[in-house]
Image (cartoon, rainbow, N blue to C red; front, side):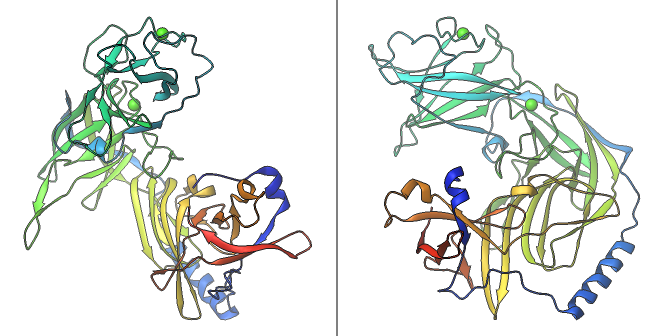
Amino acid sequence: MKNVDLPGFRAFIALALVLSASGLATGQTRESPYETIVRLKRQAAAKESQSTPPSESAGQLVARAELKLVPPFQFCPATALGFQRQDTTTVRPPTIRETPPGAPREPVYFPVRVGGREIQGITYRSTRPPGDVKLILDLDGDGLWSDEKVYIGRRNQLLTYCASYEFGPVYLKQGRSEPGGDVFYPQCTDGKWLTFYPAFYRDGTVVLEGKTRRVTLVDTDFDGRFNEMFQPPARGSRDPNSDVISIDCDRLVDVPGGGRRSVAVTMPLSKVIHLDGRYYGVEVPEDGSVIEFRRAELAFGSLDFGGKEIAAEFWSDAGPMEVNGVQPTWRLPAGKYYLRSLNLTEIEQGHRWGFKLTSPGELEDFEIKPGQTTKVRIGPPFQARGAMGTYFHNPTATVRMYLEGRAGERYSAEVTKNGRAVPEPSFKILNAAGTVVQSGKFSYG
Ligand SMILES: [Ca+2]
Ligand SMILES: [Ca+2]
């Protein structure tokens, strides 16, 4: 869903979401005095049990592996995490100063993110025979295509339902052809979007606890450095904005009853990673040629979600974390966190209402400190927000909405009741005086 808060309109609507048809009160469920006492006692007990060592220490070296540059292979990890996707536009970027010869009237433009900057690109089907599909990147940022290499697209024959072309490999250092993280394959689909896959991975094996594991690093931002550790916020639930590490990306195990499944663990490269119940400190030099695993002694803190029933996934300094269920507090490694996904369940008169996170709001970056409890307050009372401005000229138009919780986190307006999608919850819009100015149904968007 697009962010559609139109400033003028947003000020105008004091929105009260009334899921009246469904009977859900959006106010916070009140705690009885007894519940408060129980909660405070539990919190105190949780705090006492968490007087763990104050900080992680660079522990003893457990394993070291050399990682070689290898081309893409079957089950290579960037298909899971660490590829880049960009939409195209027909609007010419202001920095571009020319049109390539043979370009049609409306070529499409796109950016590609490299390190902290963006490189502009263009792709089009040439109007000159034989009508090749071409791609050019303005590597030196001078706004000219004529000083750059032209890549010819190869049609992906497997994808028959769309026109997908692969280009490259593109070497970001002009005139060079050395393997590295800064080499990639752009792929363009239907002229609408591009994906960029690494042309080389850092790959090797390491023995951990007597087990040989395959380790693969992905330079996700093509800046040639393989050691950018995760730091919140991520760009989204599929893009950690850091380099990526994969363990056993090609390993499959037999499933009882037949078939095989992957046991790959692909995650943001973080200072500490968690494997088979153990924490390892991870060190990688810039070129990614070596990886070291050290025994990590972690400090822990607690996360308090107000006792709500949740299923949440995080990315953190200590790798991916998950919590699931109802707890007064969750014991988790100290560090910085990003809320990657969340399913929230609110129970009202015996009914289970399910809310699915679409954007983490303030929880895109929060910290759990050693021995301390971080409190986050999420969920109802919800603010309903939406794209009404777009349709305002037409009072009968549908309204696309989302729900905003107390931490600014957003949920899809598609709500479930006892596991089933609620058929278009109704809502009312109140103006400042509290009178209903419009009411209607959600449209799912
Ligand atoms: Ca140029
Ligand atoms: Ca990188």
